[in-house]
Length: 432
Image 1 (cartoon, rainbow, N blue to C red):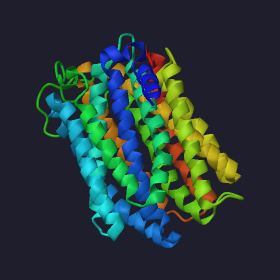
Image 2 (image 1 turned 45 degrees about the horizontal axis):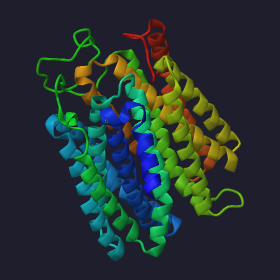
Image 3 (image 1 turned 60 degrees about the horizontal axis):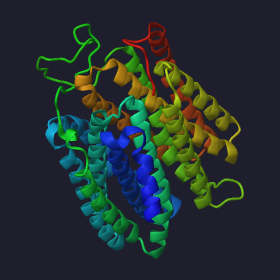
C-alpha cells in the first residue's frame, strides 16, 4: 500500500504539479469523487433498485422534484456567493466536505428508517458538492505549473476524479452488500479525509489578487475587459460569440447526459439488453459512458494548438450521428456506443469551452466566469433528467428526441463558432 501511495503521489505531482500545488488539488478532487460515488451508490440502491419499476419512477421523480428542482434555484446563487469569499477558499472546500460528511450520516439514518429526511439531506449534498465544484474552478488558475494551460490542468484534475470514482464504485457496491448504510459510512470517512486535505492546499489558493466578479456582456462596452461599474443584475450573458456558442453547445451535450442517465436507467430496467439482466445492462452502459468520458478528457490533454471552436463543432455531429443510428437500429451495442460517444463528446467539448474562457475572458474575472458557466451546464443536466423521467419507455422515440436536441444545439452554434475560428478569436487559440 505504501508503494501504491508513492506511485500515486509521483503521478499527481509530475511535470511541476507538485511544486505549484496542483498535485494536492488533484488528490483532493479524487477524494471528492470517491465520496460522491459512495453516496450515489447508496441513493441509487434506495431510490431506484429496491422497488418495482413503476414505483421507482415515482420515487426518482420525487427525488428530482425535491432535490434537483430547488437546486436549480440555489445553483445560480452559489457562484456569486462564493465570489464574495476569495480569501476563504480552502475553508469553503473543507466546509463542503464536512457538510457532506454529516449529511451522509443523516442519509444513513433515513435509509434505514425510510424517513423523508433522505430528500432534504440529498439536496444538501448536491448543494455542497456544487459549492466545492465552484471553488475548485476558481482555484485551478492559481495552481498552474509552468507551461501548463488551464485546459491541461483541468484535464489532469478531472482524470484524477474519474479514476477515483472507478475505484470507489465497486467498493461502494461491496459495502452495500454488507448493508445499505455502509456506503454512507464510507462516504463519511472519505469526506472527513477530504476536509483535512483541503487545508493542505497551497496558501495562494486564498489569494484574490487581481480578481473581480464576472459580468459577461455582449455589447462593445464590455467585450474587452471586466465591467468595473456596479451593475444591478450581474450574470452570465456572453463574452463574445465563441464563448456564448460553445456554452450553448455544451448545454446541449449536458442535457443529453442528464436525459440518458434517467431514460436509459428506466428503459434498461424494464427492457434489459439482449441476454443480460437489468443490473448488467445498466452497468455496461455506465462503464461505456465512463470510459468515453475518460478518453475525451485524455484526448483533450493531448491536443495542442487546435482551435477550441473546431473541437466543439466536430464532436457534436459525431454524437448526433451515433444518436440517429441508435434510434433507427436500436440495440445493445448501439446503446453502449451512444453512451460512450456522449461521454467522450461531453468531456472534450467541456475542455474546449474551458480553453475559450481562458482565451477570451480577462484573467481578472476568469474564475467567476467558470463558476457561472458550470451553473448553467448543471441546470441543463437537470432539465434533461426531468424529461428522461417522464419520457415513455420507447428506445427509438427517446433516442430520436435526444438526436433532435443535439441537432438543435449544433445548428444554432455552428455558424458562430466557425466564424470565431476563422477570425482566430482574440488571441491564438490554445487547448493544451
